[in-house]
Image 1 (tube, rainbow, N blue to C red):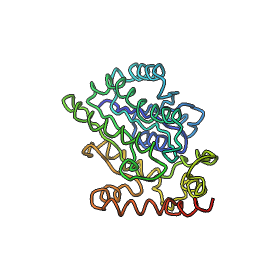
Image 2 (image 1 turned 45 degrees about the horizontal axis):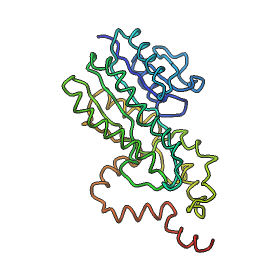
Image 3 (image 1 turned 30 degrees about the vertical axis):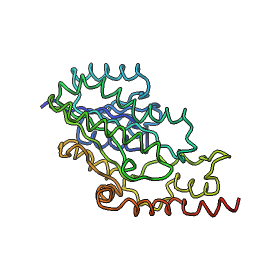
Image 4 (image 1 turned 90 degrees about the vertical axis):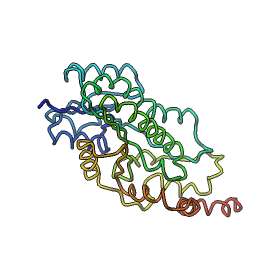
Length: 283
């Protein structure tokens, strides 16, 4: 049996991609782990059957170089492509900077699409798998996460369409709908601030607390998450979506049975929006 191969984006230390790479490496896969800066991949360097490479998913030339590297090392095929690279974003919709919004979509959506198109020439011959890491935020209306949620839900809808279009070629496509996981993602928001003229300035401290992960959610251990995800990928046992991470199952069930007005009420209170009218009157 030929050696199985996997290419993973977004493998910086402390994140889901790095943990996925470690989990596949333990299963004796030939792993190609990528990140924008290989100096942030210390946990993966020097491991057998694991290649670390530079990849900015918004750079078409770097994507093409990665495809050629894998083609040459793997005989023209790839068993699994995992689009994990992503960038979080936290802001009320009215305060979103449009240039920043375009950057988020470049990373979270357009980059994944470019990788899918370029690597399809290697995945199709292997009758392999294309896996897209998405988010439960696309199913729950979490205030201040509208842009991130929209980008991840867009990727999931694209993934669902791709799943049908690649069935004739024997390629498996799945979205990993991810709940809360212990990563270093919240460190991006340590210096986060609202614009001075924001309507939400009176509750800025409450928003900042949530941005840094102070939402009271107990997050799933990263390695536990990746073990479950890898088992699903290898076994091809998901029907288009695999829900994993803290609150993932609850979101899956709740989005189907909990009335919108109830879930909205929880979100408004939990995100400080119920206090905003009175605080605006005080200013």
